[in-house]
Length: 582
Ligand code: ASP
Image (cartoon, rainbow, N blue to C red; front, side):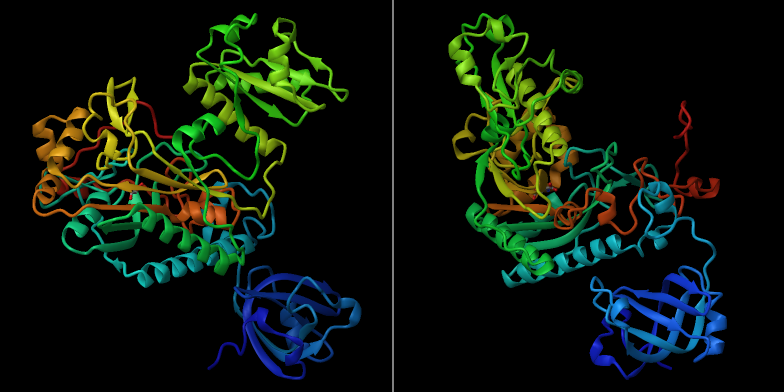
């Protein structure tokens, strides 16, 4: 038996007069007393079924029973719609199927939410993800994601990269998050760690002679979840021997260009611009600025050195944003509260009204020269940050992002990418009172820092690069350390004792000592890329079965408790938390 002749969304005027069988879900039913109209949906789209009691009394009787999301199979003749019933917004909008026989293949109870309903609670959506995934937006996101992975594979294979799988049960490979660990039944008291990325493994593959490796890899990072974070990320993971940074960046640009062209028909402007990390922090206050709008941070540290306004005169850095909006007192209070959340002590401002007159409690302290330097268009506001450079960058950077969103400065359908290069090698952790790797500990220092990175870790620069798109970090990578001595020096700087270096990374140090070629690579977040490609604000909606923000899958209930026997087998005992689970 044949279930269907065509997909619902494929029916066209060319089929008029043909007898066709379609199968799909009842997306909508309109019962006009006599005639019943049903929108029959499958992945390709919708076709309108018309059931006329005079032509098909049996089908009509059954059609009254149909409810949303019933699975139906209908046979009938394709006919043109009456002129006033043509729907120009639907590819099938000029035709309909005059049903002769109708079959209810499967039924569905009243739905927990309607598919076209907006703002349905996310937990409810995830609880019934199989319904949620039927929505147009999620169907599109999944298709874009699959299309993207297809293009990626083609580009990588075309460039001679070999797809090699690496294990999920492994040892910690650090990327700055916590590890998920899995107890071993066969080795009592021992645990595997799920890889935060295949970083070490891909280096070993290149050392093993697979000089161009790639993989669509799942990485596990036990992080506190925010709206834009998930614990299981999928990435395009790339590594090569005898690397050339230009080659890596060029190939990745080609990949992005082809994904955008083939998946959404957008021709990107290439080559992508580049900026250093230092420039990004200075101009945008973040290493992943949204470049769809300007609103650059300007520096006034020099200009305000001898300022009569004490806050400016005494601050190590004074910078400002010229915002094309005349803010009210209430707006400014709200923005100041926001700035304080990000570490500012206050938010000095100059408001220029429609006539270009300045309104500000600080204006009277500012010299002619300073005012000339801050001068802005009528109906605009200048917002200041005056503090340590890092605080100013953070405060003005987050304000810039927020204002970009609030003022709608980023046009939908626009895509702006940039490479960010010359990242610092290390970050100082106040909490732990030690240096940590800014990227991961296998990242190579820039040639001019190879001798001296351990003498001045705060300023050492790595050969590391990120690709940013519309304010998101899409990918990042680096050249790696291939000399065991250099790697040991970096480990030492990260406060790993020689014993820890052996137990944690001995196998890598051994491999590096046995003919390791220079190597480097990059990884791209597939979830994040889908988010930007689909212009989907919710990262979880780029993933078929995501967990919620508490790391729980409301559909299956994972993570779940296990039996005492299972725990005993694994040699594990549960110590209940003092505060109950959320
Ligand atoms: N392993 C890095 C990451 O997952 C990427 C890389 O350095 O290739 O972010």
